[in-house]
Length: 393
Image 1 (tube, rainbow, N blue to C red):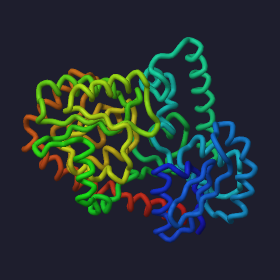
Image 2: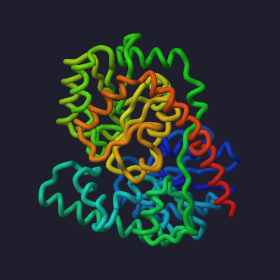
Image 3: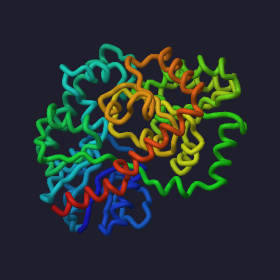
Image 4: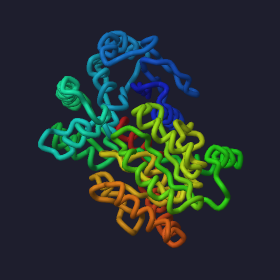
């Protein structure tokens, strides 16, 4: 069977998924608007240079022709838009199975949902918008919501990565139960087995970590959606109290963030050696960092089943999360982590402080629960198996 993946060829999740399907015995072709090398995977780039949403429309006919030339059996867009929309515009006449992750559905909550206002305040756009920009964002929200609905109607099957996204598909986009199946994205445990001493030493040097220091990590990025400003305020508050006993670490991401905020955290990192800001860390080093991390904070305004939460739990770090419908199914307060309602820097600082004071007792207790759960419910191989079954049917 030949699977055609529609995604960004350079995207880590796309590459991970394509390689996994190839190892499972599929012939895999990635269709993209950019070029990238993926081991043992054919990548077909239908565009050169920068691109935008309109580029997907302009390349729809070429995509259809290329899909047919490659004799693809099942089309697999990763994300409902723009890649699902690209598949719908191409209309190649073959079965379409799509992953639904995070922003695919949750960014387009209807106005009667509390999440709608939260997204307007702290979504992927800037936190503060001019009146003109606000109107543009409202128009875009309506337009993309229609595109998601059209694709949900068009697709043969959808795979949401947690129950909250499945709820959105069913109740906001009228997807019947028989047309979707929840499959956590899952983790690859072998990545943690392959961590070398060189990887660990690289992280020690990067963080200038002292042998006695514990690590409190914010791994998700610094966009408003991740509430990084609140996390940073809590880290600053605690850094003065704990001194060099703790290393507080904030990771950026490839999609950047507000330049003013970046300047603020960079300046603070220069002033306080116990706080580190890493603008970007290659994914190959994340398992080493996870194995060294004691506590991590994951607090996006909405989430699917995030790789950060999954990997941090498996590695044995204590998760501290904000309350969302996604996290309430995964984190049980005081049993396998801490969940904070009405997420503020004061509450976060209080929870982190208490966790640090009892870390020797809490960490092994939480780690045992989280690792057992992950092995039973959250492996990437399980997701691949579910996809294979759906594709064959």
